[in-house]
Image (cartoon, rainbow, N blue to C red):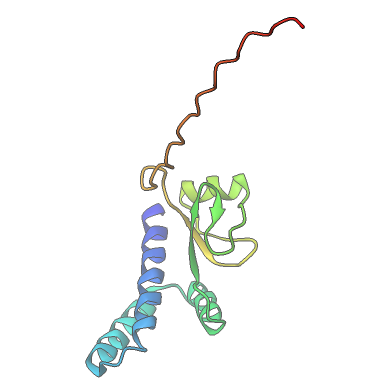
Length: 129
């Protein structure tokens, strides 16, 4: 089941990339993209494809990644239960923007840069006045 969800998300990402290629000036490239788009559309479930088409007509992507529990489409945090369900292999949509979301594992993320520690200046001893 988890592999099937990953495959649908991968197909949606590829479909989006190919749909952007349709604006390419090269007619051969457009023809190849159109043929591949038809092939991908045949392999995506109809319900998912409807959501994808609605997002595309609004000029938006239909898929967004989740990093550290935050949707990259709308930049709002998903519920902990939704993130856990995504990690378990369920297909979910963001409750705010409606995009299909997938989790980017922590191993794939680049670690945040380490902040250098500031050294504290030594205090001068207090003198009694």
